[in-house]
Image (tube, rainbow, N blue to C red; front, top):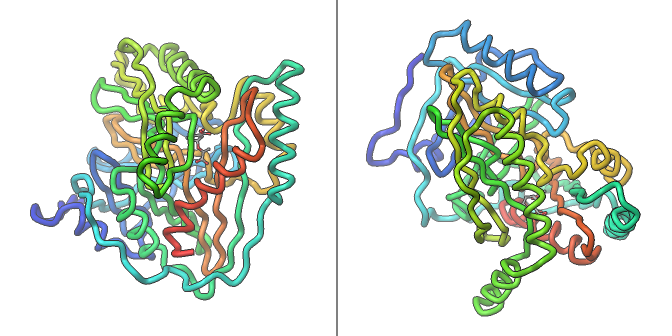
Length: 384
Ligand SMILES: C=C(O[C@H]1C=CC=C(C(=O)O)[C@@H]1O)C(=O)O
């Protein structure tokens, strides 16, 4: 494999500029970027994420030691996986801030828009979930909506990615060729897990409020989120699940951090950085991800009941949304982001997704507004 770093004077920006809509995989995170033009060997895997992680280890062992596995796994790993071992990848450092936002709209204007489910049905689903919580048996569920858009022209996914990168260069940006002429594109704020040597990091997010264009109001919303009892509760459920899952895998966790504010251009979130050290080097980044997924930031508590509530109230198959996207190398190091603020794009058809955590005290209208603001990340990328 030839790993050809970009020129030192134009690293991450050059990699982003090199990325075209025909490429197999692009991923950028606060630690660096990775581009693969050709997919190479596509892994024929599916089922439990733990089994997929085992298959990834086997595939990497069968290839030269400098290869990486890249791609995405869906919310339901049994039905949606796109992982491959490219023959060549280019790496860069992290994206700089201050990139110019390309003015052109990636798909021209909008020809049609359909909510899945309707806003009224989504709000009714939130209400039903809160009622079930009052009766017992469910403490949190993340309910998602999808938005089906037809654009005036086929969407240039590389241009969409560049617009997303310019607005949120500090997040987890991805464009994955998922086969059949379809590309998964997004800009997620959430790290599911990374492993570098023995160092393990997870950054669960939960508890959110939309940003405001007015700086005074924006700061007020941030303060309100930090002190919101309902959002702290929603957040604590996720942190406890992440710490529990990592602890069971023998990760020696550092003392818990208090939640802090994490911002994107569209949203404020509560986030906790969970750090630890893994003693067993065979516990790869994807094996860690398998122990974590799905966290209550995308599913709920208890997960079995939350899945049933999701199936009962959501109208669109989640596909890759709320799964994981990233990479892993032969040493087991890697980085997997939660697949959020994303869309599945095929020509002029764009399917966007956004969810919100529902806990006792959640208000249907507020959750609807939260999902609308989250959809705003990709809508803005499209210039719509
Ligand atoms: C499910 C989504 O966000 C998750 C991540 C951050 C905050 C969340 C929340 O506050 O509900 C969600 O758990 C989404 O963006 O579609």
